[in-house]
Length: 263
Image 1 (cartoon, rainbow, N blue to C red):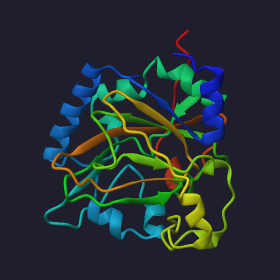
Image 2 (cartoon, one colour; image 1 turned 90 degrees about the horizontal axis):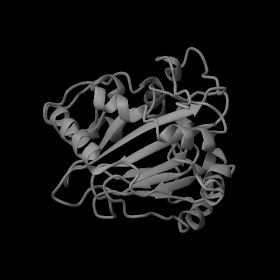
Image 3 (cartoon, rainbow, N blue to C red; image 1 turned 120 degrees about the horizontal axis):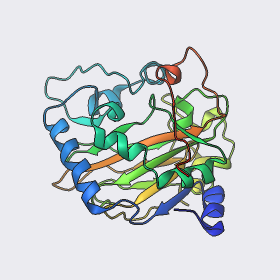
Image 4 (cartoon, one colour; image 1 turned 90 degrees about the vertical axis):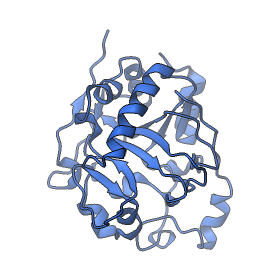
C-alpha cells in the first residue's frame, strides 16, 4: 500500500491517520484468540490496572515494556507486554510487508521497531478498566528526536462505550509548558489553557481490521470500557532508522528491528 498525497498531508497536519480495513478479518481473529488465551492465563510480562493507576512519573520512566511487577492478588490485566517475542503471529503482524512502505512514507526514513515501547496487546476489561488520561507517549520515552509513530490495530469494534482512542488534532506540533501537565505527566483537564484545546478532540469508531497511525507527540486518551465484553487491541511503535535512542535509558533496553523494504 502507498499513501496518497492527501493522506500523507493529513498525517503531517493532524498527527494521525485512519486506514480502514487494512488487516483482514482472519488475521484479526487469530491475533484475538491468541491474545485472549494469554490474558486468561495472565501470561507475563503484563501491566495491571493497579499499576497503571498508581504509577508515578518516576516509576513510568523506570519500567519498560520488558517487565512488570504485579502487586494485586486479583488482578485486572491492562496489557500484555513484549508481544513481539510471544507468538509468531504477533511477530509477523509487526513485520507486515504491506505496512512497511506506509511507515517509510510517514517517517521519511526506513522504519525500525522499538520493542521497548508499546509492543503490546492493549485491553480494556468490561466494567473493571480505567480511563486512559490525556498524554503524549514521547514524554515517557528517550530518543534524540521525535520521529516515532505508533500502529494501532482494532481486533474488533471500538467505540465510545468500550474505550476508543480520542485525539487532539495537530497537538504533535504544539509546544506546551510544564504547568500544563500534572505530576504524572498527564495533560491536565482542569488547566484553563488546556480546556479549549481538549474541546477540539476527535475520534472515529473503529471496525475489525482498521488501523490508526499516530505520532508519538500527539495527545490522546480513551474512556474506560463500560460494556460487558473485553476490548482487545494491538499496538506497536516504529521509529526512523536515523532516530537515535538515548543510551542507558529504558528505551535502549532492547535492540531495534529494522524493517527493510521488500522490493
